[in-house]
Image (cartoon, rainbow, N blue to C red; front, side):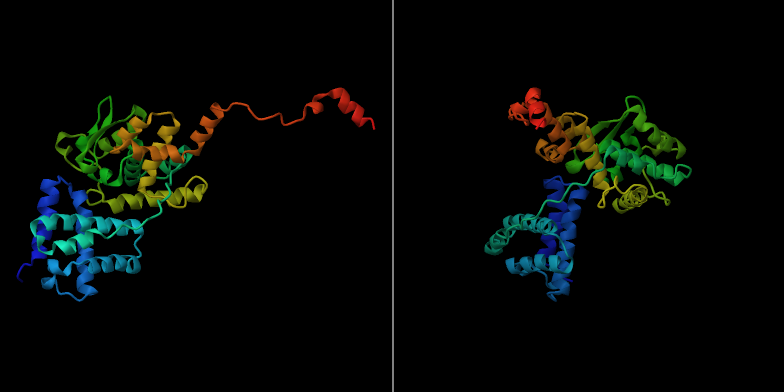
Length: 337
């Protein structure tokens, strides 16, 4: 098979430009790769373009729009997912236009494709009692249950993203006081999240039980499956959903009908906010790039809004009861009729 210009530039884009010039991590590159896997599948399966015939000339505004529509109609993707796929294609086109300007007009047409408006999803989080119920679900008499309890507890305590939990290694945990966890976040940004002694008891027991306190195990994944492979995003999601289902059977009022790994992260943020922790510290714990991202929790916390209003309340309304109703002699006289 003779390589095409599309295959050459796509390979350079994914393996050189994003990684070397943009400094993107493997987790950042993955959504770009997934976009082009779907795009190539669409061209070959729907548009009947043979793999060795996919060239840059095939990528037009019409083919990109048709692909995005196909995603929503066939795969039932949301507008947010559609916009994410479009952003990946836009990034590729911006890269190609400087190296292969022959189709510059068509590239500009592709870049003119607008994103679709999408409704922001609700944030689902658990109360303190809900978190307590969820963390009480693992069977502490089994080794697997103790692992799951340590995982869920650490996930909530640190407010970590699911991929950040996947990437944790034994050496990321500082097992001496003051306890902390080193988290490799988005964009390779490292943050240190402190842990209290009460929080870390389950984790220390898990490390000792599995012999992970030895120096030779420091580079090993912190959480593994039965085959000693590190847990995947899907594996951690399965654990969260399994125990959420179990907790919901005990008290459906404490566990939202929709829950995900991110719900534990949202819960930690809300609980910190309600405890009066400054938004700047919450931002640093969660690893947000901007304080504006963290402010979303302040906007949805109705309890904090109510407390603020009550503290700032000044009585300016007129008396509820007319003045004459406070005249006892007048009331007695009226009652005598």
